[in-house]
Length: 283
Ligand SMILES: Nc1ncnc2c1ncn2[C@@H]1O[C@H](COP(=O)(O)OP(=O)(O)OP(=O)(O)O)[C@@H](O)[C@H]1O
Ligand SMILES: [Mg+2]
Image (cartoon, rainbow, N blue to C red; front, side):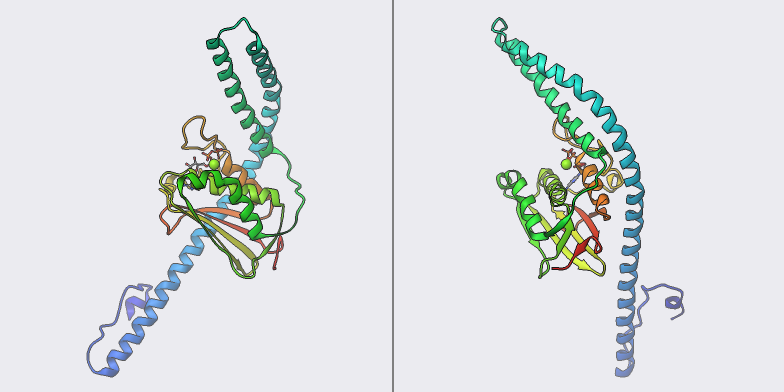
């Protein structure tokens, strides 16, 4: 009993002797089990709060970085248009051979890749005074899954959607929330050996919580604090620029919400988004 009083919730009473003693011991053990479980819940909640707090500090850093990057991107945009235009003009000349034409095609392809990165950077740095409206969460999830259908179908990935009934409505910018969801779904679909993605939502006190999880390899804990950084990617050059989750973070922050990463019970990566209820409305 003294050890339990000192906070050691692992101690249990021996359940033997007369019936009354056994009942008492079993009741006591039940109480200790419940207390241990509550301790875990509190620890979990605290851990999440620490991660989310870090997330908030990160969004400020990200916003500043986004503005800087957008300035640089703007300057890069004009010379890129010139390079692309000149390569296109050269490719149209009849005097050049197939080899030269294919090399010019390669130049244009790479320029287009940079243009896309520049576009994303400019988007990241833009001041987002977004227009919001009342939108049905299930519709937003369907729009996002339509966008990634081409990546899910060929790999036979099953998308489970578990929403509370009635489905909550969001007061949000639809296009941006669809962008958030499609980025998370696309990341899950691009992770190796994923066969299942689960999207869940729950209304809890004054917030709406959304989880997107998969059964892939997950994200190593050493990378948890880096995944929202611009340009953090583990994908090969040309396949990922590492801007997807930065944008997701930015949008959720603009909506007054938070986003965190966790190890899903499905075995892969899990993302938790919370949106304050002042920004959302019940159905
Ligand atoms: N569901 C997931 N499973 C495993 N790793 C993930 C998952 N989601 C994100 N990651 C990791 O986080 C990194 C950053 O993701 P992010 O979406 O920002 O960039 P990206 O997917 O690499 O490139 P981009 O989205 O710009 O095309 C990924 O490269 C990957 O290492
Ligand atoms: Mg991505």
